[in-house]
Length: 285
Length: 285
DNA sequence: CGACTTGTTGAGAATTGTCAAGATGCGTGG
DNA sequence: CCACGCATCTTGACAATTCTCAACAAGTCG
Image 1: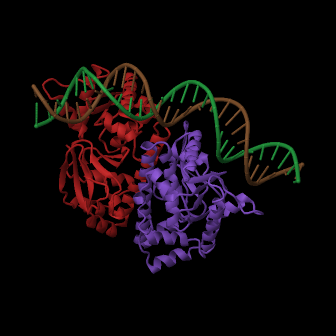
Image 2 (image 1 turned 90 degrees about the vertical axis):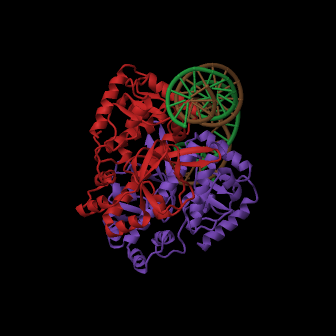
Image 3 (image 1 turned 135 degrees about the horizontal axis):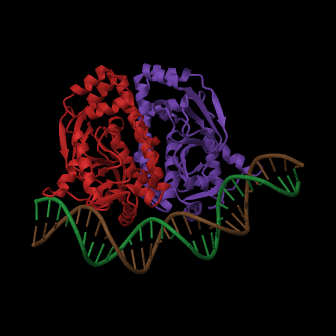
């Protein structure tokens, strides 16, 4: 964690050399360098389920017993390469995935195209849908190199039967997801132009901050124009023009699949961003 | 119930007199007549909570004890006039509302306008958001004359503590809501034109059918162009043109706040509608 | 009757969508 | 180390759709 913080701070220095393009430390592969930050590696975290514990603890305090239960669970971590749809519409997964590292999106594909409906980050359990509803109604894909831990449905159901409070925390998480979807309906239905592109960026930054994976005013995200186009419902060409406009205002920089937030307050304003819908009580705004 | 069915069937006869406009029984106020259907009055239902029981039972069987618990609850029914926002963003309601009659929508208002994010019908409990998250992040409004029954949060929490299965059914309901939101993101972000207007109509018809409040191919909904504009993110003028197009194809008729579905299969096709996202197992498609 | 809501129409402005071509930078494999 | 393929980003021109404005018709409700 603290390592990453320093990484970010030093990167800011390079940024100041040029407002619009990212410069890299000489002698290091640029992308390798960036990706170390963007992948949200878990340097200081001993047990990977700590992300989940931290998150649930924010939603409502966990008892010592519940905490021990989660900590003791042996996680089997799987790596997923960028772009891979590791859960597909129509499937009936027998396990849920806890995101341990990297960024993930839910999407639906139709004849007319593809729409990303949400992003998910370390600490999110992304498959509660299938746990209670059975069949998946959407795909889940990796946006960058991702690591997930599989938790069998049976185990989760057992946990929740034994500790009703735990089930309620997961339910609460589902309600927050629903609130985020509502905001996305607003974003694609109500807003246009720059706000529409800026909003998902603001959301990601805010959510990453909550779990301690991003700082403002400086922050890096693995977002390509294609990803943003699928998330906003705009054609790529427009995302490009919106990003160029946001760049020219000094709010962001983007380069080769990496988007950098330079002016957090300005970006929030451009997006008409109000974090209330994230229901993040522990957020230092 | 059966009264309504007959009502609908007889109305269909009037419809056949003219493909595009609704005719009414002579001697009766036209709107009063229609509204009797559109309001979904509960003729044959003795206890109003039956809607909720029926719905939960479809999500997963209720035990006899749980069923008795729900049936025994004394409902205090409140009438809400059309257009009234009876829950507002920012509030912290101390009770949840079970819709007993009428149609309700969730919406969010911003400086740039208003966006409807979902519809809700008899049997839906619309305030589980505030039950676990506290603060409302959206408004809830009546689309036509609505009756709701208030259930104090404390009672609901007590029910769920005593009957974990009940809590799981509510959670499941929340997950279906989330799936519907995902589809709405698709509708406003991915689709354009006629499909975008036709889709929410298809959704409403399907959901009403599940609870036995609508039949195909003939069905009536209390939807104005303004409502559809807010739900689709299109300007009213466009909704008008889309509806005229759908009318000219013989798929629907609309008149003075009442929308009639004439050709269910054709409408589904126009909307690229696939009911899978509603997760309605009991649906006779 | 008169205020109000709902639906309709036309015309022009602005935005969004499409197509096509090319520039840049990274990773791979020779 | 270089060449190549690939993904990403950029630009321009044009078509299609969406948005806005404005005025008016029709129906409901008090």
